[in-house]
Structures are given as structure tokens and as C-alpha cells.
Amino acid sequence: MARTMNASPIGSATALRSLLDLLASGAATEDFADVLAEARRAGAPADVLAEIDDATWTALRVHRTLRQHRRRETELTALFDTAGDLAASRDLDTVLQAIVRRARMLLGTDTAYLTLPDPAAGDTYMRVTDGSVSQLFQNLRLSLGDGLGGLVAQTARPYATPDYRTDERFRHTGRIDAGVLEEGLVAIIGVPLLLGGRVIGVLFAAERSARAFSPDEVALLCTLAAHAAIALDTANSLAETRAALTELNAANAVIQAHAAAVQRAEQAHDRLTDLVLRGAAVSDVAAEVGALLGAETAVLDAEGGLLAGRPAARAGLAEAVAASRTEGRAVRHGDGWVCVVLAGQEPLGSLLLHSRPGLDDADRRLFERAGVVTALLLLLRRSVAETENRVRGELLADLLTAPGRDPAGLTARGRRLGVDLTRPHLVLVAQVGAAADRTRLAGAAARYLFGSRGISAEHGDAVVLLLPDDGSHTPAATAERAAERLARLTGTPVTVGAGRPAAGPVALAAAHAEGLRCVRALGVLGRSGGGASADSLGFLGVLLGDGHDVGAFVTSTLGPLLEYDARRGTELVRTLRAYFECGGSLTRAKDELHVHVNTVVQRLDRVEILLGHDWNHPERSLELQLALRLQLLAE
Image (cartoon, rainbow, N blue to C red):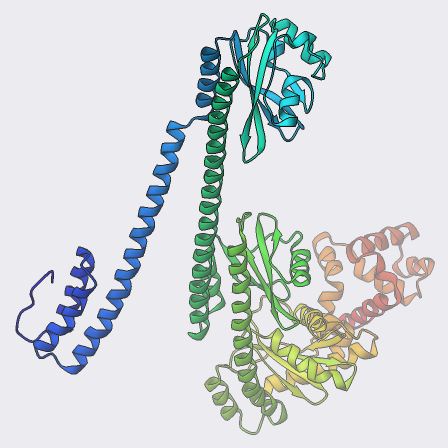
């Protein structure tokens, strides 16, 4: 054994160090069992012996794995060394050149050359020449059966001629004869390079004068041809071996890359799932995905609103999200990627990857898996929000049913539920045409409020939404935006009326009544599917609103004229009143005002510039006449 252990009781840590020492020193397999035996002799407790036994088996597995790796390294080293030796000592061009030169020297001919087949072209070509002086001859190509070489390749037998030009055994062609004539060759001998009965080339020796070749010379050239065939076969085998090694290395690289991608995907899935289980925010998931893929990410809701990350370019984003939903995969968007976030067939939002144009299959699958995890997180958050909204909805229902019964108790309940009723809130009343759509509207209201501190509840034949009012938007603008969003979520027109901002149970109940009257007024006016507040309904708002703010109505209707008169000392308001009182007659109006008719026309032109082209339309003129009367009464 590599190390002698003390006789004192042995601990698991000491045993582990001993096992690691054995692994580091490359000890034999039998030595690992001595650690457990020594622990038994030292009187180690049973639980320590169990730990040492488990550790020993683990160490043996590691030892076996290391031994396999060393054996594979030795095999690969030997394989590459062998390939290197063959490449160094069997260079094909060098070997063939040496064989051709030796044939020329041994046979004492003026030239020697070697032709090889070209499978792609279907003919043979000059591979090596020695003693040749003609460029045309060196570039000759021979079809099967043409010339002496064609006959040798076709019959797999050696042929010799003392005078090629007069020998009729061969098929003479113009190109071959021209090359032979330019080289000045007369006597030629050719023998086949045979490999397993197959001709893989022809070795030639040629003389520039008439000559008869003896059988010994033919046999010698056949021997050299056999050497050339062996060299070609060795070179082909070496090329095949190199090709096989290349394919093996490529396959090994693919396997390693795939294994690394699978491991990375598993780790990413574990990290993302852990975030969901810990109740992390959407921004945490976006940051984790960005860290995994090395790029910035963003999460958008189903309407394209930003939930987390950096906002993306809007151009083409909706089309990219639709394409991702259709294909069921992440798709390119500009210099990044988009993946739709789905729960079944319901789109919950989308996941965006910025500034990452190149995304391989492994990273693309990881990005798509992040979309699934994001969907799970959004579903969990929505379920929690819907549950909380149901509880808060009970508070809202009690507030609207009996606000004056216990205002302090309602306020205290609100604080416990995270709703401060003493702060200004906006009450929205939403209605749909069919009673069957009300349940869908209630769910859409919960999704509309998702991520905010608002609450919603069904009340009567409508759905009521209570939103904190920060003064950034008018009640009318908030109602219009809610009507548009709720209509998209439900797939049917939704009419929304807004009461004025209020605080406290009693005031909020009054605001609800005002919003309800606005909803009904919109229906009467044929404006179902829109949103409005009492202030935005003009003179109807004065009638429907709880405050009956006459001054605000007069100012909003006649404000530009009042301001112009005050600044310029003109009489536009008086002129407009006289015009309406005279039934729209310019002649009667100029008599009433004691001015020229052109003056009346000029003043009314100024009124049109300040109030707009529709100032004389029936609906607008009714509001103007009512405002003029109310102003006269106020004065």
C-alpha cells in the first residue's frame, strides 16, 4: 500500500485522503481495499465503515475511468504516430518518381513514364514522366483502348513494340501520334499496375530508336510496376485512414458538443425552475436568461407592454410574435430573437433577446425553454393575483353595497388587504352587451389589473374596477384605455364609464354611481364600446355628475373665446350669443350688436379659428348655447 495508516481509530476524512493519494499515485486496484481493511482493524464505527466503503467504490470507479482514458490516449498516440511514419516514408509522388526513374535507368531507355486512370473523366493521364522533353506528350490523355497504353489497360497484359508508328496492333489517334512524334519515340513497352486483378495504371519505358525488348526486361518492368501498385495501394490506404480519422474526430467533436449542450440545457432548466419555485419576479427570470445566453432580454405582456428588461424596437414586433406562435419556435427579429409565451393556446406575452443575431440550435432550444418557464411563472403570478383579487373583490362589493354602514371598518379591511381607501382612487364601471359575456369580462378585468394595485368585482350587471389615482391621466383617458384593452381581452365591445377621483368609502360609492350613469349615457348616445367620464360628456356631464360643476363646463366650452376677449378686449362671446339668439341671421345679429355685417362675419371667422370648424354643427352648437346661457345666469 502507498501509505501505512496509524493504529488509532481512523476517521472518514483520513480514509478519503488515503483514497485520493491512491488515485493520484496510480496505485493498483487491490490497494484500494486495504483502506477499508485498515479501518476495520483500527476499530472504526459502523457508520464510518459504511462511508469508507461507499467512498472506496466511488474511488474504484474513478480509477477505472482514469485507466480507460489513459488507454485511449495511448491508442490515439500510436495511431497518429503510425500515420506520421507512413506519411514521412511513403510520399506517393516521391515513390512513383523513384520507380519511373529506376525503370528508365535499369532498362536503359531514353524516357519512362506512368499513367493513371481518371475516374471522373473516364480516361487516363500522365502522372509521372522522366526523360521527356515534349510538353504535348507530358499532357496527353488516353481513352480506354487508344494507343499502346489503352490496349494494356484494356487487356491487363504487357505489350511492347519495336516501332510504334508502324505497329497496327494499336488504335492510333491523332493526338497520341502527334505527342509520340513530337517526343521522337519509336520503341515502347507498357506493363499494367495490377491490384487484385484490377488495372490501376500503366508503367512505360520508351526509346527514340527502334528496339526490341527482351522478356527479362518485360519481367523487370513488371516487377517495378508491382512496386508502383503497392505504393499506390499504400497511399490510398493511408488516405482512407486519414479520412476515417477525420470523420472520427468530427463525430467525436459533434458528440462532445451535443453532450455539452445537453448538460448546459439541463443546468439552465434547473436554474430557471429554481427561480420559479422561489417565487422570483419576471425581471429575475429575464436577467437569468440574459446571463445564460450572454445578451440582454426583455419580457412583454400579451399587449406588448414591458414587464421586465430593456424595451425593444416596435417595428415588426407584432408580426414576429405572431410568426413565433404559428411556428411554435423562436424566430428572428432584427438583430435578436422573439419567442411567444403561451399557456396552451392563450398568449401570455413574449420573450425578447437583444443583439444576438447568431443563435445555434442548442441556445435556441434553451431560449424556447426559457419561454416555457416564463409562461409558468406568469401563470403562477396570475393565479395568485386572481385569488387576491377575489378576496379584495369582496371588500369592493361591500363598499358599493353599504358604504355608510361602517366606513371605518371598510377602511381597516382595505389596509389589511393592501388597499388604502383614504387615498384617491378612480372607479371604472364596465359593461358588455350580453350577460353571458360578463364572466369573461370579470376575468379580463383581473388580467387588466394584473401587476397593479387595483381590484375588481362583479356588481349588478357590470364589473367595477378600483384603481389608485396618481393624477397622470384624466378619468376619461383612463376609461377609454380600459375600454380598448378590455375589448381586446374579451373579444367583444366593452363600455366603460369613469367617476371622478374620490377617497373614502362613501365618496367612492358616489363615484361608482356617477360612473354607472356615464355607462348608461354612452349606451343611449349610441357610443357603446367606448369610454368616458362625466367631464368628457359635455353638458350631459353637468347633468349626470354629482358635482354639477357649471363653471368648469363653461370654461371648457367657451374658454378660448373668454381668454381671447380678456386679452384683446374683443366681444367674441357677446357676438356668438347674439348670433344664436337671432337664429343664425347675420343681418339681425349686426342690428343687435350695432355693427356692420362684415364685422359680424369677421368675428365669427375668429370664433371658428378658436373653436374649430364644427362649432356650428348641431351637437356642438347645443353645448355652446347651453354654456352661453349658464354664463349669463352666473353673471
